[in-house]
Length: 124
Image: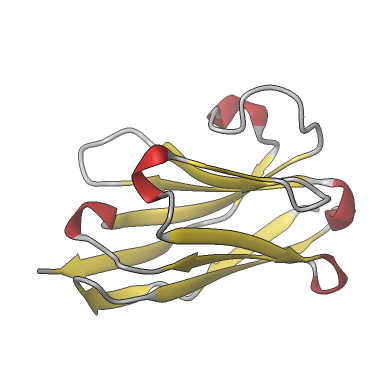
C-alpha cells in the first residue's frame, strides 16, 4: 500500500522560509518521479515542482529561484525548500508520486499516488 506523508507546513511571515518533507512507503521510491502540488482557496490544484529519480528538476515559473525540490532516495523522502515566501504561496501542499516519468510533470493525472497535504500560510 502506497503512503505519502507530508510534514513541515506552518505559518510564516512574508519573506520567510519553510521546508516541506514527504516520506514515502510502499513504493520503490528510487524509481519514481516525485512532485509537489498546491491548491489555494478557490483555485485548482497546480504543479509546483518535480524531481526525477536521478535528480532532474522542474519548477513552475511562479516559484523558480525561490523553491528547491530535492530527494534522498536512501530515506525515501522528497523535500521542498521554500524561501522568500509570499502571500500568493498560501495553500495546501501535496506530495505526489508517479511510476512513469514521461508526460507533463505538472499534470495531476500523471501521478499514481497522493499524500493528504500540509497547509502553508503566509501573512503579509
